[in-house]
Amino acid sequence: MTKKELSQYYWLKKEIEDMEKRLRALRERASAPQSTRLTGMPGGGGPSDKLAVAVAEITDLEAIIAAKQIECIHQRQRIERFIYSIDDPMTRMVFTLRCIDGFSWREVAAGMGHKMSEENARQTFHRYLRAANEAEKTQENE
Image (cartoon, rainbow, N blue to C red; front, side, top):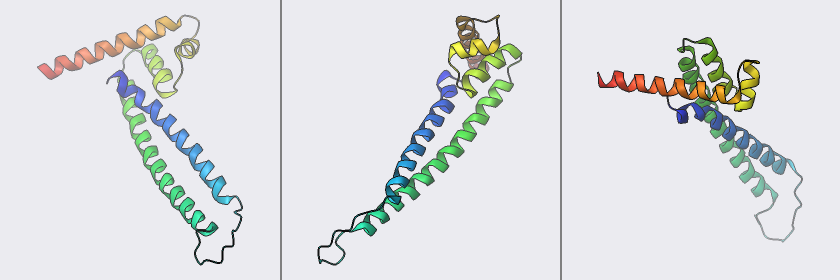
């Protein structure tokens, strides 16, 4: 698994959060009272048209969010399977804190306790990832 693949879960969660903010804003706009402009013309693009457009946008965004949430679940499961395959419990914990919990390196080090610095956490992560990718390449070449 590559560093980019491991970061996908974090970015999917961020993307979903942003979409949920947009969804809340759309819902607020749709529920806000609309002023009616009387022009004497039938179907003059009044509030019901705007409401219909807002409802369509909300429905579309809800469907996209649902699909992204499913993608996020699958990505998390894939990363967890990779992490659970790591033999060393300390390295597993570094990967869990970083890739699943989305911690910064400072938070990873703090979560690991007094024996690990930010740099040690980062090095543990990168060394294992490099070794795992090299082992994968070796298996592919055999």
